[in-house]
Length: 248
Length: 114
Image (tube, rainbow over all chains, first blue to last red; front, side, top):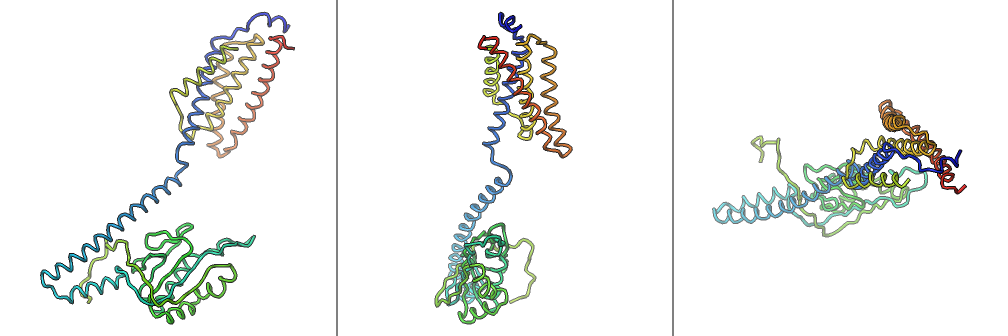
């Protein structure tokens, strides 16, 4: 039986040949699709990361521009004060308000608090215990303000009236900057008072006395005779709040 | 045999040159459909070698297998049994290898290697 049909070529019908073309097409389409998938950005999450990074870069540029404009404005105000003979007290008042608002860089004695994540996570332990959280930073900052801190910054971000300190994924958001460990908090004020304020705050003291040893966190506080805290670089424009009149 | 290889190559070339692709969400359907198509084509080759090939049976078998395979996966997605595509993959995969074995043996006999 087998010998029989090995004698002649099998009749490959046009239908079979045609369907093989279709099969080839299907395979190619699947291949194209997989290829496109590999080239395409893998999903929405990374798209959003790109968006965030782009926006952060834009913000940096805008902040730089804002800084330039502020210094230009300062020059113009001084000139205007000279020209129009506006009283010196007015521009002094302006400087004072600006400093109070945290818009200008200041120097003075104070303390520097370092908060860093623990490095080695014990097996089976909750890794969260080994991290510095937004609440830790907030506790230290609040304690510093209690101790009469006059200017505070976290990793170069000046704390002002509208500054949030909150958790943003694996980073901590201060103003609109995402910061990562280690966190360096600089505060200007009476170093001794600041130190005792931090160490007597319940939450902050836990960091220094317990967590530091238990979880290997980097926690330290040093007094410094001379610190520099830069001014707030973000925007202070208010959309809803309007002057209510009165005041100083 | 050569005609079939050429036909396959022609199809792949056409597809690659036109760079047609489907939405990413259809990829599973397409993959299973391709598997069903391979199965149907091998079945067609086998039938040719056994001289039982029939145009109507083959073309209808190709179309129903391919469409049903994709449809089963679609139904699986709709009723929340996403793994239903595994059933299609396993069933067609087994048949592909079965047919391949038969075709190989038939070809050996034809070419007098046995």
